[in-house]
Structures are given as structure tokens and as C-alpha cells.
Length: 264
Image 1 (cartoon, one colour):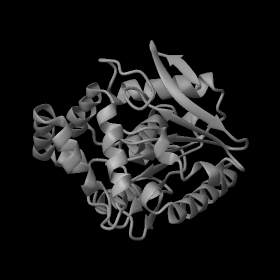
Image 2 (tube, rainbow, N blue to C red; image 1 turned 90 degrees about the horizontal axis):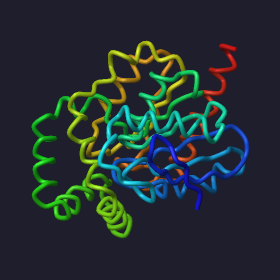
Image 3 (cartoon, helix red, strand yellow; image 1 turned 90 degrees about the vertical axis):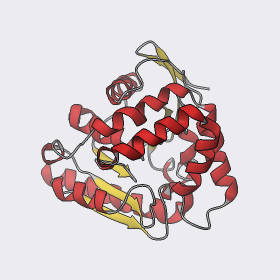
Image 4 (cartoon, rainbow, N blue to C red; image 1 turned 120 degrees about the horizontal axis):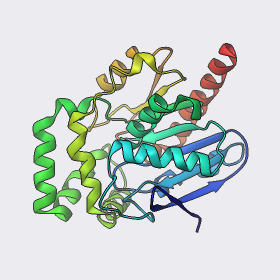
């Protein structure tokens, strides 16, 4: 398995295909395996990199650095070490937060950003709910995760997918809970008007975690941004409705490429 040492930790990644680069970032506590339905679709004409960010999946579980800045720093190092040529960064849930922040902090490194069900400013408006979540995780981690994760998905989602998500989260390190603590202080809205690259928000129509008003608000603040809604999907549209998601991502990538050519 390919591993990379960055910032005194070891990250697991997968790197397949050739062509314009895509960097996929998973959500809280899961892993790069959540993009399994995208790999066959995009490795035929893209260089596709998935990474288990720190604390998750097959990567190291350090007690420190589990912050937005820490993960973004890891991504900067990974892009350089793998010599990725300005990838489009596709991030699910908090992975979308990482993708946007990477675009804000290091616009020269990325060609575009696709946040998928990204929380945006929502946790900062839900401080009491976040505090309850943290208390519940400390009191009964397994029970809290098992009770919370089914609500990420739209009704009718296969139980096996939900169970697999729960197992991934419980297998990850406890130190990633720091992201839930600090999320209440993060609000990307002031930075979005200055974003210097194409951005296309993808969001599940029936996302029970992050309401559609969030990507709509963020898109309205971001110059040239677009929003596509995945019909019938919840918080994890790339897993729930992979064919519809892949089609929407294809469209987003084509529009972003056109926008880049128009400004070249």
C-alpha cells in the first residue's frame, strides 16, 4: 500500500489513472474507500488520488494536529510530494471544508473545488447541538455514532452501507473529535468572495445534516460559483446515488474547465 510521510505523520493514499488530477477528500471518521464508486468512473481519463486524512482509515492517528490548519497543511505537503498538477479537490462533508480552505490558503495549488454536502458555516450556528454531540461522544462513543450515522442518509439507504460507515468511524482515532469541537468557530463566508478559482457545490436534495440553504448561501457569496442538487440523496450522495453523483461531477468538471479556459 502507498504511504507518505508528511508533517511527522504517515498518510495512506491511492493514486491511479492519468490525465487532469482529482484529489478526493472523505468526511469525518471515514476513509478514501468511500469514493469506491467514483474510481472506475474517473480513473479512465483522470489521475485520481484519494487520501485517508490524519486520524482516519489507514493513516496515522496522532493526538495533535487534528485541526483545519493541520489537515490543510498535510494536503499542501501531499500535493507537492506527489507532484499533483493543480488538482480539482472534491471533498465530502468536512472534507469539503478542507477543500475550500485549501483553495483559500493556497489557490496556486488547485484548479477548482467541489464541496459535497459541506457544512460551511452551519456548525457555527449550531453550537448547542455540537456541544451535546461532543458530550455524547465522550460518554458513549459507539452508541452515539451508531445512533447518529443513520441520519446522514436518505430513507431507503441500504443498511449495510450505514453499518460500514459506523465501523469506519469507530475504527478511526478518537482525536479527530477535535474537528467537532472547533467547527463552531469556523465560518468560511467572509473568505468566499475572494476565492480565486472555480467552485461547484454538490448537495443531496434530502441532506438531513446540512440544509440546502447552506450551499445556496455559500454559492451566492462565491464569484462564479454553481450549485447542483442530487435528487433523492442525503448527506453522502456519492455513495447513495453514485450514478447521479458521477454525472453531476462530470458536468461540474466540464464547466470548471471551461471557466479556466475563458480566463486564460
